[in-house]
Image (cartoon, rainbow, N blue to C red; front, side):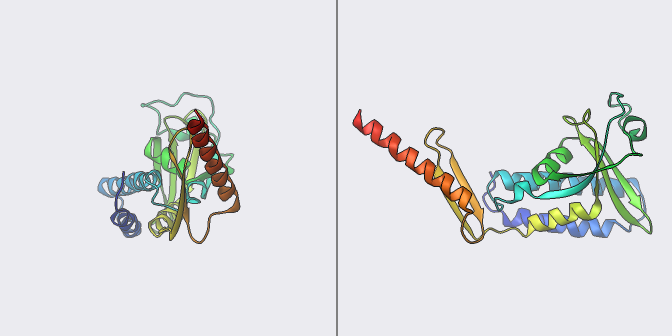
Length: 206
């Protein structure tokens, strides 16, 4: 569990600056490692911040635009994972999107992760798929899309929150954001509170 989120969010913003600094650098193995490390660790930080309840409730379903490539039918394994042109149909890209949590999970557990350099010392983006999704297809995300999610997450400081305990599981059901919770969440919370009161009264009657 994360106690203080500030240093972690600062690290995300520092990784954004690092990636922008590395983008025009000379292509070397060291540069590739530094970029991979920044992306992987940032994905882990973002997921951990979410799991610790340190982000707005809308973060989980925030969507990033991607390109999807269907598998050709060959099994992706440890020896051929880099031969993406043989394994996936790169000639028929399809528009797609992933939620923030889906993207983070697939980067953290990536089985395929390949950086694509663009023209004039730019980074075009990354091909990726996870150990769980490698038979379903391959995704490509633009460099700017990842940076945008990292930057937005690093600046996400909810100003208000609400919590209600689930009467059966005893877990806290939380909302975080700015202003007041959406009506849908409020109604669900009120329903759980009524169930809790009913459960308490029933036990008292025993």
